[in-house]
Length: 323
Image 1 (cartoon, one colour):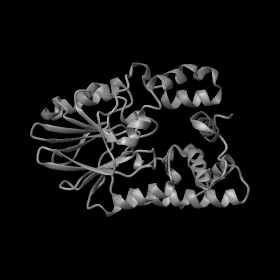
Image 2 (image 1 turned 120 degrees about the horizontal axis):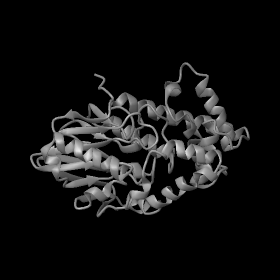
Image 3 (image 1 turned 90 degrees about the vertical axis):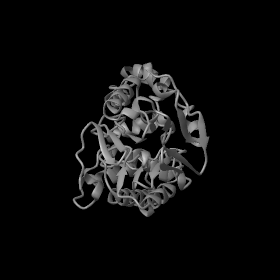
Image 4 (image 1 turned 135 degrees about the vertical axis):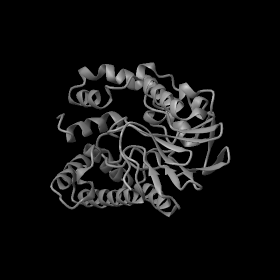
């Protein structure tokens, strides 16, 4: 049964809630809450302090146990899943070791400075302002995890077992999914973008496909993605199919001598001209620039634009902002 996709808290199982932020595009991530008696676990914080404060207020108004968050799990290092950590700094904050390392590499102040400089950056700056201008990065104090793990860790929330399973590197270097076997629910972090193109910051793509297969093998009914509406396993299968399409399409275009950006532009034209591809209606299609660059990198080819700044320029180009 399809669940309504609206901002706020929606119950997905007994004692388990998803916090959703439509439209699920850049920065508009989901989070989750698990509660049993007076014990709580929060899956991810949000992109800035205000958004996280609003979420916590909503949770506390509906779930009395949420007045005190005992454990926080950061599914990965992107700021829209951890930059609100300062508001739950007295909690046990858990992440993979690779997530903690990556979190320290891009402090909020750097993105705040980038947004301030955006007016002088031309098309790429306009693109950055459009996708990130609604967030207040200057107010964020980076608050890293105080506990890390590798592989798998099981934690308890009252009488509920919660499995933390490291599946990265994929979207980022340290991706983790949060599995509640008793409730048949999984929080995927950004291993699943439901309704939007994913973005392969780390890869390899084969690892991401393996993570999709792992989720498909779990005995779950409900899948809470990092972005987009609550769903089921069909959305995970579609994402795996998309990743295979990117891999095959980018590989063929590399063999034909195209640059990574040329290949991404050609794949984007294929998406826009299709009535058959499941992802023809997905948002943020400009992320193909990053995804194709990841394939080229894996195949040992020069991907073209180097570093996040260059890749954001490529995405701005594909999104119609120019160079």
